[in-house]
Length: 517
Image (cartoon, rainbow, N blue to C red):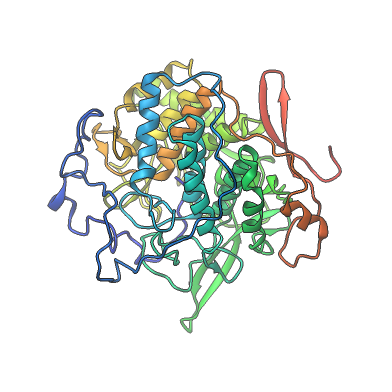
């Protein structure tokens, strides 16, 4: 899951989530999920798609039908995997994919970020794209289904309204493609844009072009519709938030991104498309603090901003980076510290630890189970920075990802054994379980199920970075960059600012500065 930005006070998922009543009215919030082989219980809180009612209301808007892009030929099957899935791994992959099947909006092709709210962010759509590719590569879905879903999703991305005519807004109603806040509430004027979300989607779109070049022209045209004049400034990624001034007018405020791990991940995505974002890419110096005897990164030391928004350290972005881009030397040092602190906590306290941002179906809806947050180790925080003493979770996705990356480590083996049963075979994996009680945290998300699919694919490809180079430098994107004078803030030179390298047995992406090969 990605970090949430500051959001309006009315953006709790109260208008559209199924549990408007108190959790106790409809379900025990932390009840044990059904066994993996059991049928879906009647009281299961995760909704499945149902036909929309005939009467349109605020929570049941008129459906929009998105026409898929034209067919680009016969869909091709995936190549055989270097290390085929076991029967058990295939069961996990099918369950994770079923989240996307259950939460797809058939009229638009979008998928909700979470099962309890009708809302899709660009980050979540990046999750969906990578999940689609992983499911195709592992033969969980047919080439025909992959192609149908991709063509409809690209059709939707080509027509979503852009905030201020620049970039996609932070969230959309998957039924109408209209902007919403993080609680699924309509916001016609939009809510600004997130460079983290844009970077996530750019990475997923690049991966789509690399693995399926037949979609290149459509993908490039989508990216060329956007303006990058304000999202990339002086080598730094910035995001736009919408606030009200004293007159009640809605005004955007654009500030550099500072969220540890997420900024570095998103920067790689922009570099793939030729943007110079050196100051946001992994590198430089990081402030650390000792946690369980390990120097854990807290924030990047920087002079370009005094912003300290949402400063906490969680595993999610480091794992996503490792799975997709591999671990370059600097990122490896950060990744190792983040992991070792959690493993050492388990050795010291016997408390299973898989720190992450997770989304649950009860207040406060978002939980950041940090390694370090507000200068305190092992605290759980909500989006407003409030401490949640009983809130820490062990993340299912984090357990799968650490095990995929470090399969011989005794602690990752403990983690995976504790989380592999946390799924419903029809609706996907749950977010995890509570550290103190062991009870399951009900709630399912695109980020969790996408990372589980990517982790299984990473294992099946013998631990190779999932993102591979796309060498087509004559595509519409690069032609537009070469032409110059776009008025859209495209890169200055038609070269990628990151490249894939091999160092002995290690493979990873590194930053390439102008003038370097």
